[in-house]
Image (tube, one colour):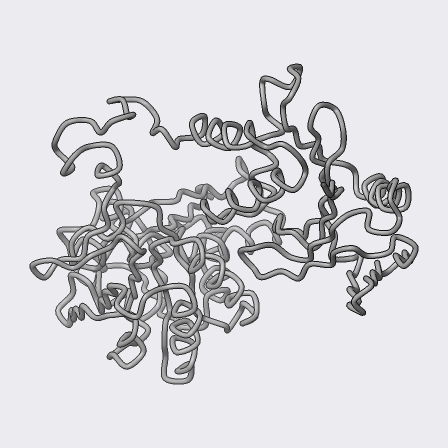
Length: 434
């Protein structure tokens, strides 16, 4: 019996001129073609003398099993999908089914993946150049992914200013997911943020809508639609959606001379090295812990980064052996909690030894000043702090994931307790009153 073969074929948007030569060749050389009915119809001109198996929208694993069963009989099977079969496509389920059956590369069944142009690329090409800078994609389908997971991802990318492509934004039964996505994005982005809504790119029923984030959820959106949401720099002009690459950061009027402080072909003055240098330069003027903490928080706020990113920049300092340098050191969690306890209880001035700040400027904070170190209680689950003004703070130790110390001239100035995202839960520093 001849060796069986599974061809996982992505054939692009659906129009013949956008199908790769290998995708066309793979379908033509197959004995059996398996796919969702809409996909089969898009390549019907290539299916003469083929055994064609049509499957429904939610029968992905059935398609993969069917392909495996036919390949075991020595047949060449094309399992087809529009776009790129490896992007929200059939490649993943197919490999899962194969591995579950005990298959591995080199066995009697050969597997080849044929990539194609994915929906976000084809839709972007129809509206201009919205993906010229950093972008990501998220599927709004909650058929297999819990909504809290989807919402957490939407929140992260909205806050991070990515351009985003939303796959599976809406269906006959799933109508509120796009509304929830809009709500999450409006927490971070202007209602006027450009949005492109592209249905059936390069197909006969293609429809393009250029709208704003405020208008997005009210538009005609379905399962054949991809939604492209711009970042803070994306703009509409002359009916096109464009996201700048960033040349204006270095060159006057994009094509002009290099801006002062920048060099052609070199990292920006606020590239990685320059950014670290700016933090160290600001801290070089600090005279005591009060100044240090204020500068650290200000830099985190200016760059819209977690405080831990500022600490990591300091921790990588090449000047660590010099005097008068502010340095950050990360401690193991248990060691750090013990150090935090000692730092408070061994403070030389028990009447008003230090300040505690809960949170950070970016997220809002409460300051406990002039607290009595004897009223700090530690347990396995909580840190409870009371100050003389009757304010109590309760920090759950389970939320503490990272602990850092800030040192100057080899002396610990402050200790920071951070959450898993590197944001400050609580920090304390020695206050030197005049």
